[in-house]
Amino acid sequence: MTSFMLATNCPDELCCALCLDSWKNPVELQPCGHIFCQECIGAPRVCPVCRAPVNCTKQPHRSLVNLAQNLPVRCSSCGWTGRREGSDSHTCPTASWSGSTEAPSTTNAQSTCQGSRQQSVADTPWLRYGLTQEEYDSIVALFVFFDSDESGHLCREEMGRLARWLNFARTDEDIDRMFREMDEDGTGTLCLEEFLSWLSKNRPDPSVLYGMSQQQYNCVMMQFRLYDRDRDGFLDADDFSKLAVRIGDVPDIESGMQLFRSITTGHCEKIGLHQFLLYCVGRMFR
Image (spheres, rainbow, N blue to C red):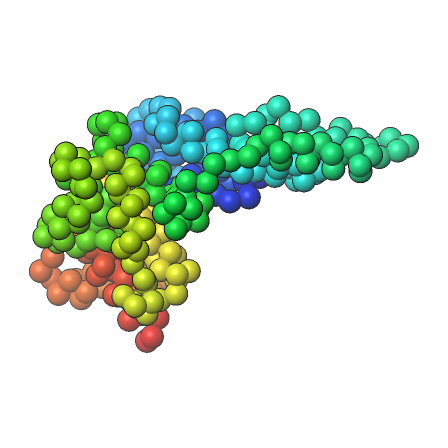
């Protein structure tokens, strides 16, 4: 019996879009920045997500890799649970049994699983901020992604891009106010703890803002993010048209362009996440 190590709780930001599981030996495509398992992606010429040409690949930021390695996984055969980083050393007692006169002892297998679980007791920093582990891992991954200079802190510009990406702010005034509230020590940069502390007290409620359930909101956010290639919180007419075709709102790119002009009334070259969410709300109740 072949066994597989599958993540039991994986945020989208740490998930390979090809195998739909957490990264294993991740590689980052350049210049688009999308990350896949090395075994899944091979040697691509174009990115499977955004179709951008691939110039080269590189190792993702070590903080992202560490997050992926710390995700919980489960053996598909014996039920062993642990962390991705320790799964390579797991020897499945049922995977090697095939055609024997006697199956491996259930008692022994359970003992192995229990011992492994006891050895993989994890810290729970997400509880300090009222987040689930999935939410925490997602926020940390995004924080690291938008830390362009890998300093471990976000400057005002980096935080602004992250705030727009998360739909926390839509104007420069909003970003300035948020930055002042987050920068508790007045250093002019934000550490992860400051960002998470602010988030724990200011989490947006999609049911109040848009009349959406959390699941509907997350779905729209993920659709938008897949086509926001430069991660600035906006879609140009071409990106919007491709997204509109993919979700079935229009039959072709030309119709998507017409829809874009009708939404922006022809005055804007890009559509923001907030405006896209409002469009989706209107579409839901048509």
